[in-house]
Length: 171
Image 1 (cartoon, one colour):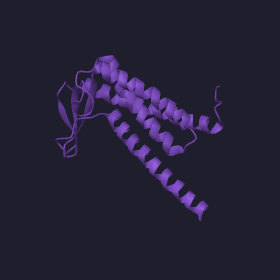
Image 2 (cartoon, rainbow, N blue to C red):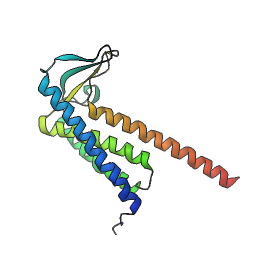
Image 3 (cartoon, one colour):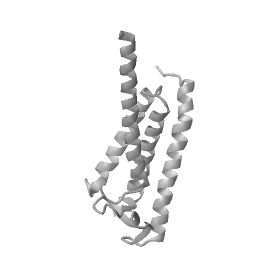
Image 4 (tube, one colour):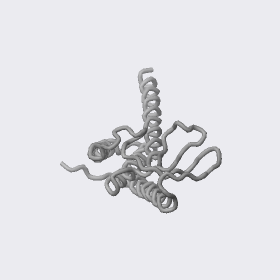
């Protein structure tokens, strides 16, 4: 039995889908311009003493885990996106923060998935000069991390509101 898309869900899709598009375009454009304008391994100051741009290719995930296992990472990303799509649909009545967090996560995942499918690696370029041991990352990674943080924040707020509501009902 198909669920008819209610107006609130349709309205949220007008946030979710364009936001994913903006994230994907921002990610792919930054990757394109860094790879076009810098030799592989080259480094340039972006914000001196804070952020450098470094042109590197990562055949793994964060901190190069699963390095060289592109098939696993591609399959895992597809499975995640399908599972998250189902979860998103089931939770579609949630508020704007939930939808923004979801768009950040999905947009970032798709950005890195495009790289893996097109090149067999992910193009990274953001290096925190003040934290030299932190791995080089990209715009997609940033949005995934921010999205996860926002999703956790959403559920904390939801839990607090639910607890207060139960206390009010129970006296």
